[in-house]
Image 1 (cartoon, rainbow, N blue to C red):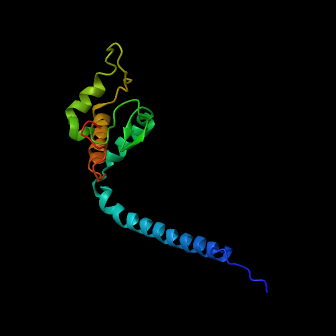
Image 2 (cartoon, rainbow, N blue to C red):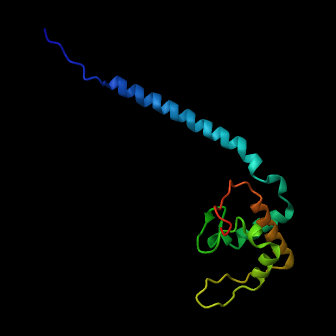
Image 3 (cartoon, one colour):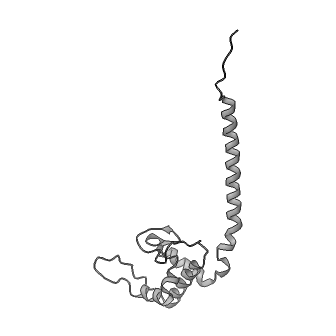
Length: 145
C-alpha cells in the first residue's frame, strides 16, 4: 500500500490563517477608527471657534502660509512650526513680527510683507491661539516647534 505523508502545512491551513488574520486585523482597524472618532470631539477645541478664528484661517489659507510653515506637523518645513507659536511668543510678538517683514537680514529666510490691517492681524492671532488650544498630545515635541 502506498501511503502519502502529510507535509504538515496544507493549503487549507494557509487559507484559514489568511482569512482569520484578515478578519482579526480588520476588527482591530475598525476598533481604532471607532476609538479615534470617539476622542476627536473632546480634542478638537471646536467650542472655541469664533468668527475671528474663521477669518484668521481664511487668511492662513489665502496667503498660503502652509507653503512655508507647518501647522500641527502639516505643511512645508521651510519656516517654523506655528502650532504653539501663541504659547511661545504671544500675540504682541506675532503682530510685530508680521509688521516688520521682511527683515532684510543677510543669509536669513525672509517672510513676505502681507500688509495686514490691525483687524486681520487680530484674526490671524486668534486663529493661532485657537490652534494652540487643540489637544495634540504634546505635538510639537518641544516648545520651539
